[in-house]
Length: 196
Image (tube, rainbow, N blue to C red; front, side, top):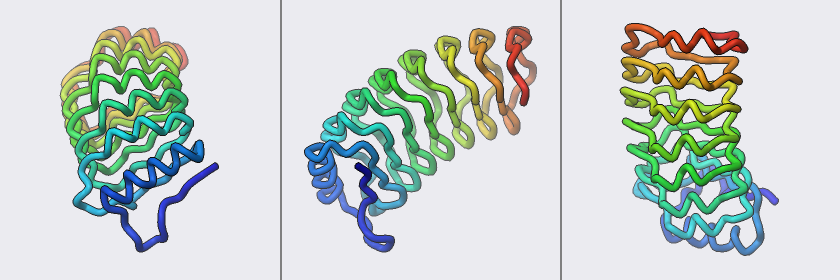
């Protein structure tokens, strides 16, 4: 069951969002689309977000969200999460508990770092981190053995972790518009890499 919130013009305040989360949790909703649906004053989401236990696809993009509640880690069946074009500064440590996540879009936020728990997202295949403020990518990135696409262009990256060589499934690695002075030799281990 999919829920697309409200009409095109109607935006949701915090109370309505909380109410929608409650009703979606009761119905066992599997897809929830809140793209551009939150009023500008909603900069964070209620902890009740963690009740969406059955959700597999969640679109929170094109809002002004600055922080995610730690309870987001409870969404164990989530395979697709779209958070692009928000105001996220960081991600909660519990983010790494989203063990089913395959597609993650974080482009166009204000992220300066990723939590060390990020390495636990071992199902991740597609990761878009472009247009953020990242200076480094964590070493734990090397644990993402299923990662096929890593888009990290338009950041402030000065180097890549040598552990990138462990991401042996990588087919596409986009790094344009960064401050990279060199690439680690480990890039040579990425035998499936087609786009660099």
